[in-house]
Image: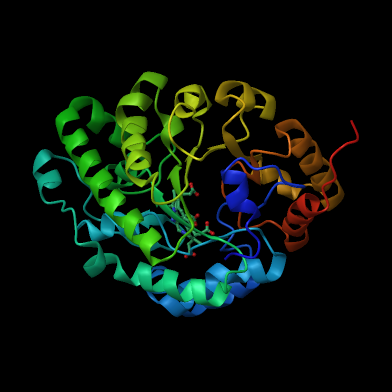
Length: 344
Ligand code: CP3
């Protein structure tokens, strides 16, 4: 039994005294204890060494006491396992030396044996569960097929992922073949993660908002939906789509347990689009953590009032930025813990 199960209860839509809180990318570069490990071990060593991954996962919980932990890993371990080379270059970020550009390249991509290629993630989950000792739930995650395709084709981060979109629009059969291979791998991967001990899974569609509403349905949502359908009986699924407010109504018709939203829409708009029954997660502008702590607290309280305290998980609208102050991150978490519902 998990002692603090607030996050899991919000996913079920239960009534709570206050909503749960965690921060996307909470295990990372704004923490000095993380930076110490980053100096000693390169990125994929940190992901592949269960002791390091578990330690980094628990660091933010120890410091701030969020209501959920998210496993330290990366969405790009999946393409790696599928026979696509992925490096993490300092100052550049993800770097794929041989991006996919043709059907022949897609043919070389495999749907791998998960235990053989990603067993280290399962080991990290088991070790993290031991260290958490059921204090809070552990979230597992994967990138959406579309967001992974973006990196596989483009070869690196991009302002517009033009090469990825050109590939989809000029070689749709190859694009859909690749998307389906990523989807099949992701389903196997997330099912193994649940078996290893994660309590919920989040799908990060970080670049879904790059697509027009029509293209989003064809190249992204269709595949996320397959993942939700395949996982829904194993664990709660949270779908986060950055810039995807235009699809919220459709997303809310799915069997997702919650939908993540960014800061480009108001809580009231999100509720209206998603309907009263869907749990929502979000949507504090990550750069608003640069405001003074007293301002952050006021804004977080107002955000909870606007979303409503139930069927809601407090989060940022995207990942925390590396240069955010420790006291500013603390103000965000504390504001939620100190939340009192206004007298009606
Ligand atoms: O706390 C957590 O959220 C768990 C850890 C986590 C990382 N990556 C660690 C990481 C998670 C959930 C991710 C997901 C991820 N990775 C996404 C989806 C979420 C999002 O932010 O949109 C994406 C798009 C990636 C791909 C990726 N990995 C990028 C673009 C970068 C480089 C840019 C950056 O943020 O530094 C990474 C590297 C990465 N992944 C780092 C961390 C802590 C920083 C590099 C390092 O520590 O050496």
